[in-house]
Length: 234
Image (cartoon, rainbow, N blue to C red):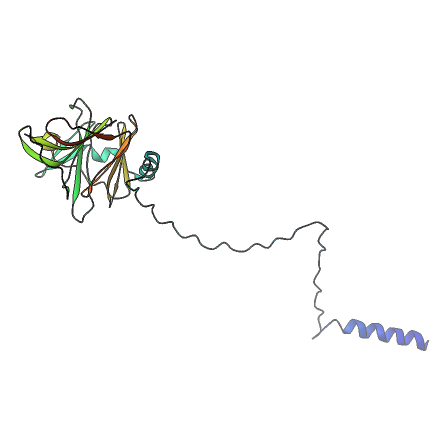
């Protein structure tokens, strides 16, 4: 009987050792990891920071690089650019478009317009060049060194003009830097460094700014026709 009493006291003491303040604390259960199982620890991902916009292509860029960069621009609504403004008067352009983009230096712009009446369907742009081509010796008219015609198969720089051409209708709305505009076979992207345009039909492109004119793709230097200052041709 004495031995049985000692066993009972030991059992009561063991039960009391698992409680503090009256209630017993539950013991944590551990689930064994099966052999060959890899345990992974998940951590919160660091917040992503937006990537800066890619820089405009340089003079030595390939045509594909220029096209990819132009296409990466934010698409603008073409319907916004079927109008031109001059002296407070707006002119609807039908299927033609007109827009104004930066040309490099502060407060300097490039004005561009299309005219379905032109046989070559060129995009015509006008800007001020810091180093313009010289006036050609032949021909008459007002020398416009920053007159650009880009029908795709060629790129003409400078022209002797007797009239304002399609710009008689005025200038188009602003195409903000970073925006791209698709029209016909062309797509243009505005940038602080100037205007980049590609003609998909001829796989040619141009970069025009106050600093000069850069051709891409099949465009190569060629003898300009009478009345023009410089020419690139496919």
